[in-house]
Length: 346
Image (cartoon, rainbow, N blue to C red; front, side):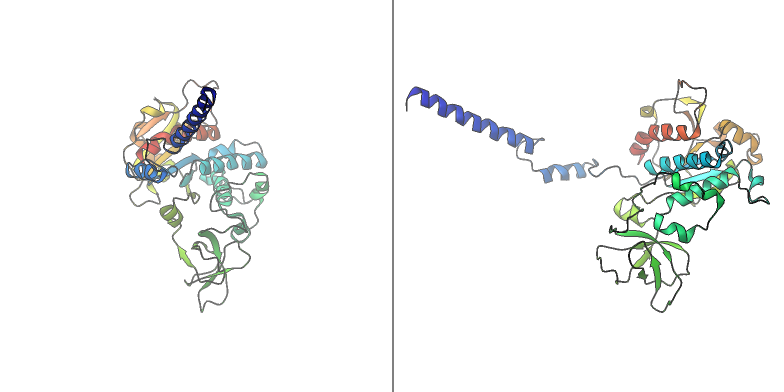
């Protein structure tokens, strides 16, 4: 081999060696000899999240229904309600509590609803999977413009051609000798083993067996979240005033951390906010005049201030350029602000 051939052979060997080292570095970012499986296992053992955010606590929001009263038309009121529903879904909110400041308007002689009742109706309608809405919601004039709203597209809004290990359904009338038929949005109704009265919304465990004739089982609505970490929509609750938000909690132990949001609240960055380990977090948003007015209007809270009611009272958008921040805007700003503190606490 002459000198030129020798140099060319050595050059080719060096290229192969470099290529081999480069490939090995890509496969073993965390050190030589470690497999991808080993890396994942180490992350799981150290508590590092490898499958997206996991949260054991529940997060509820309380919204003043009076924001609907400020809308200039039924169409604009419906669009506003749709924005709140979208925000709740995007940020995986477990419960939306709508509190009223004018409950006397509710169910007037002409069928007029208060802003809070209207908001509850739209929120419940949008959270319900599309294939169940006709069975669960009778026609109402306040649903006139819901077709204009973007879908929530939550995990439980399953398409007809998709298979999901859980599906929402509504129980049907018929022969109950073998169980109860349930409409779960498939080409055929499914049979569940429990005997249930018709017209009830239920969560059905479908499993992985796609045999449509197999008998299924109704499970608690929390099962998709508990078993598969799936976000399964929000619950909606009506409260006649602000104090009812706290006193009528669906959780037996109540809310163990309550945050009020206001431009008059304390200013701190999201990274400075450290939430304790807790089960049920509530974040409250006021109406046109803020939470202070809601406290003044509530006779059950007479003589109390924000520091008596809320664990923390925060300004999540300091140095605002506009004189006012609308509630639907405050929802998006604040829920993003609380993402890191909630993740750290959860």
